[in-house]
Length: 422
Image 1 (tube, one colour):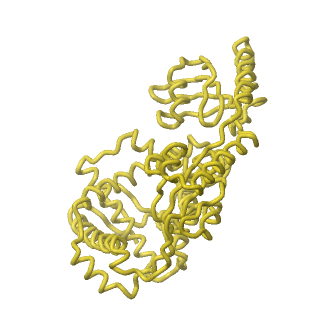
Image 2 (cartoon, helix red, strand yellow; image 1 turned 120 degrees about the vertical axis):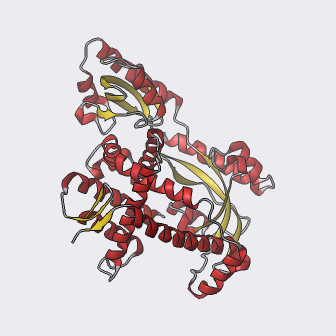
Image 3 (cartoon, one colour; image 1 turned 45 degrees about the vertical axis):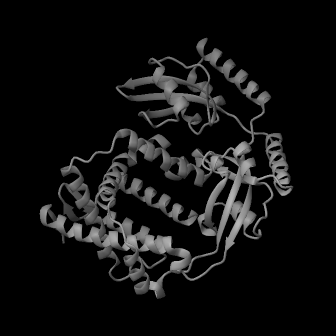
């Protein structure tokens, strides 16, 4: 998963670079959309890297071009059918994308350095392309929602493809308890006091940009805290609410977000677009914070090993909102589905019923500690209908949907203008 995500990062990077610098040959036209040579080459490189094949593989270029034409045909049909994707949906999708980039890179600053632009600019540059992608995804989902496979179809698919189906890797049925280190309250007070002094100095006539350059711990410090232009959805909620309450030139009170403590000044506003700058003091966790979290997990592990139900402890103490109410149950996973080496190392040698020692894990843009219970281990095996029916069913459904999709694309080619350019 980590490898695939890094490839996705590279694909986005190539889109952003080409969208700014390249004017090249048009190879196809579909309705009002064009497909350029660079767009085809980007997709070829992406697919080749993802599947570890030679980009010059015979037939690959035609396959990629056909796929791009199909996407443009669906986009044209979405416009004909008045399918829409709201600004809020696009913003949420971009937020998720950027959060994933930050988690993978380790920090916002590293992402901005990698792409050579601010997070806000990345969102702006990719917004239109992401909207088109979401329109295509929505039309496909609407058309494919009713497609199902019967048990007979699954069995026939299995008999036809059983010798070429991938083996099922070893699976772990796991539950977890997650605890996040808490910042020291004394440190919070010190940061608030320091930022309040900065705020008082600015309000007494100090230069906001100069104070940002001297004190801000954000990547925008060198530019005086300038965040550039942004729209609703570009910022985390608490920060955004504060910015949109300000009048031009006004400076906020202290704002607390997941990144730390901020003060922000609204420079200019045009409709729903805002141009602001800020000063950030990061709220760092101390070694004592980590020690307290680890000690708590060691205590919970000991209680579970002495007979208390792991699920009950997870419901009461875990801070992982996705699994807490399920008693910490994450379900069946394979090692290649786990992005973090710390988690893999923690569970790969555990026997059924054993609980890992506390180990550090990433959590969004931050981190925490967790313990994992291995409830069951299922050895690697050849895919079969008895043990892996759902897997076979999903593969059969995928093949059926793809067949229906290809038939639909051929129908679209009869009603929507398209042509190849030599």
